[in-house]
Length: 472
View 1 (cartoon, rainbow, N blue to C red):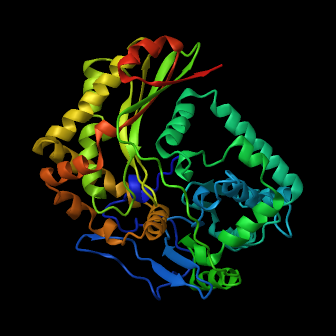
View 2 (spheres, helix red, strand yellow):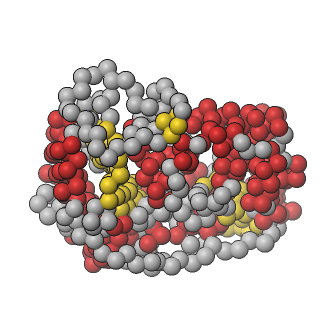
View 3 (cartoon, rainbow, N blue to C red):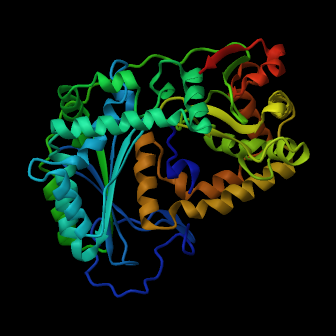
């Protein structure tokens, strides 16, 4: 399961990346102490404030009077990377259980109180981190803080709820088999990453989930769901008293030493490897092409994003032009760098009719080989620059999006000038630099290819000497 952080994919800005003018009346006195504005000239981020509590929790405050609301986003620096190879699904199970009851509220009471605020919890566990989000109108901000802190700091982990959530997760894993695209994604992740945590579903495995005990959940929570392993973003129309209350409430959270968890390295690929998974009756063939790529902190990150715009990152890309438009082999083909805390993957994703599966793979590999050998032209790089710069304002259009970017950049160890200097840095990338970075990071001769389709596709791939796995 992949995680796409706003700071990475650059998900709108009101005008010039400053707070939009408010059409609603500001009902609270905005706090000002400690707030800074980053950027220069006409390009400025909305003012924000950073506070680190004594227990290690870092809090970002972004005051925004645009709407009468407040949101809370917590990012806990734990994911499936920290659950250990013997307990796949432990982090996701622990995360989902947060909203299933606290020491003073059962699941129904929590749901009812959030409902009365017109709110709900959004909990998103991933391989690298886990996020918890909720919002409410400003009039309910105190109640929101009470509920949100109770959920994150005082979970109950009751036996009945553990059994119920585990059952739901097991059913979800089973349903994935019925979705060819999701199934192919999961199998491709394992093909590329092997036993590394990035190679398995965030929700774990059937065997792993069945083997997780209540004690495992409690231990995982007490070990990793700690203030000194978390960050919090507070956004909205609040006053200085609310800032103080947030710090007072979360300052009671007990910190612990966070252990380092070592994981198995992804398998090394030294040749093109093709794996066919065949199942009788499938009407289309899913094709995944990829290899281990870069981590988010890689110095070539922006160069590679720019280069990939030409290969498969935009509608005008070479892959889309050749495989979709010229040859009519698919409705969709695209590529991307799935960057993470550790090295993620470089992926090409498409699907086609069973009868054209082999040709689709052939043509996609030709495009990648040609690009590595010749690189993008000045015109293509210019178009890619315009695309990235044109899309960028959407990354911080709202205060919530800015907050999430600040959390994500902090998590990956990326300075905030990634945002303030984005246009300048992208504009300065030369074609030769983008091409060199891509050639260094991507080697078509070492791609792993996973093909999921009907048995009739097998003869089309004989030249690749594929490994074949048959499903019932």
